[in-house]
Length: 171
Picture 1 (tube, rainbow, N blue to C red):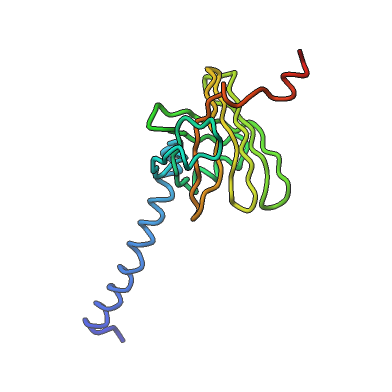
Picture 2: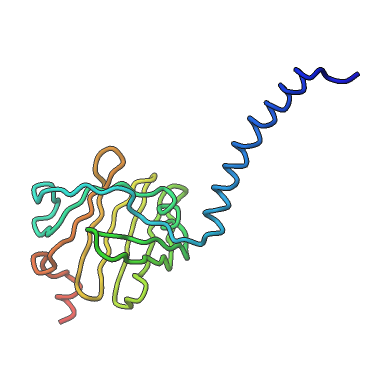
């Protein structure tokens, strides 16, 4: 015995209601995967005053929200993310090594693409990140947690930072 026209319309309505949202999710997931686009680390920025700076030698400070997808990339060896600091040209961070210290913590070490003298050191503990990015041309960026899941991105003046103990001891 067949279904009435009304029952058939209801059945097609339910099929459509389930099919299109599932198709949309699959499209979004596969679209990111197939696009090969490197995720941007920073989703939103809010310029801060010098009073917000953690270090006295901060030249510029932004309060930023990081992309979860980009943070996942930072946590894996071979991961890449684009860091656009202070509205300038993107720096592509390439993770070369990850030292895991348990299930929810570790240190990601890397470089800026095209800058062999750069150094990236980012530590993560239970989903909270902190670290630094130094470039071959002498720029130094500090990343530290702020409130509400945000972070402070600070450009520090290397001349005001002093000398590290390792550099002084090697002379």
